[in-house]
Length: 44
Image 1 (cartoon, one colour):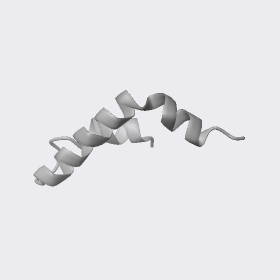
Image 2 (tube, rainbow, N blue to C red; image 1 turned 30 degrees about the vertical axis):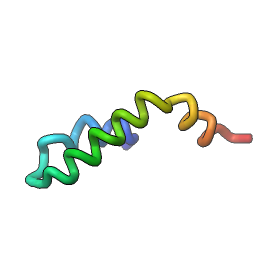
Image 3 (cartoon, one colour; image 1 turned 180 degrees about the vertical axis):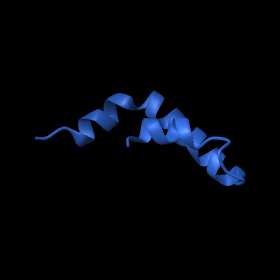
């Protein structure tokens, strides 16, 4: 499971608006800072 998969599964799936909000923040972060995330996880 990846963070992208979790973002697809979690929104609206629960009864918790806090979780839905956190997923939206994560989605936005992954979209806007994708290159930075990829650099952080690349083997050096």
